[in-house]
Length: 393
Image (cartoon, rainbow, N blue to C red; front, side):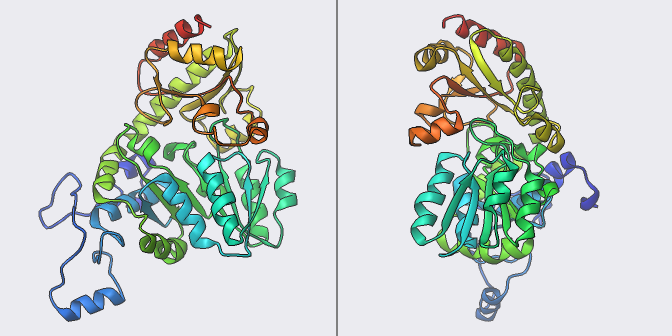
């Protein structure tokens, strides 16, 4: 039975639904709407839909539902709602659960667009936002009080790979009746631990490891059936943030190999991180599995892997860093991560360039910082490319 399957099996078989033709590969249903035999059947469908009944693609679709069911099983939750992008999932989860007068406590180490949703969108509608140092349990304890409605954080932060003691935060939040929403993009679906630590909802940018090949945008919100099929489905389906069937089908086909891909990438990332840490032109390396990582003990308690992304600081600041980046031959300069191709990003001038300088300083997003996403190339080739590029600095 599926409840006893291991994660790799769920990635291949979870949520399967077949048409009357009995196809082996998951079917793609490219349709906006659905047909009813009678007016009475249409009326009944709009009152209540069964597990194999659909109304409109913005509300649900057989291909999308397969993807939702599979991801829920993989992440360990009861249900899931697929969205058009990772940020559509973040926005959908937060907007569906919050109203004016509520209080959110969040880690300060968040992706720039997540900070925008909190500080520019939710705050504009009267939601109180408190940001804390996510690595400081005492800071969470002080900020989370009886007025707190929701806690939001990245389990592993982008781009500096800070690691939050998630079980501590969940225990503290639940003690005052607050919900916990975790952005799990960096942890990867293979090594995710949000459910194990007690998070009520986890949000995943499926653009990243799930697609993993630079093709499709996507996001998903995983949680209890009560939350997902209640306020979250209601908000997302009415505001148009649902995933399209082709993206869902592409994601389903990518899930077959996700475990193999991510484990290979994570193993290579560890080798690359160790090599970088020994290089004289690198100030420091941040990778959760390295003993030098400030939250190494917490990271290893929560997950056996540090994921597929490394952060490191090149000596000499922006000019030296750009020299290094421009000399790379195998790595691709882009602003995505978790792709089959290895990618380098300069967060201070791209993904996080809109942050005020004081926030960059607090998060250690300096002029020499590089976010490196390890792909599926030969590890020796990756290290050789890093070496020749660092030689130019």
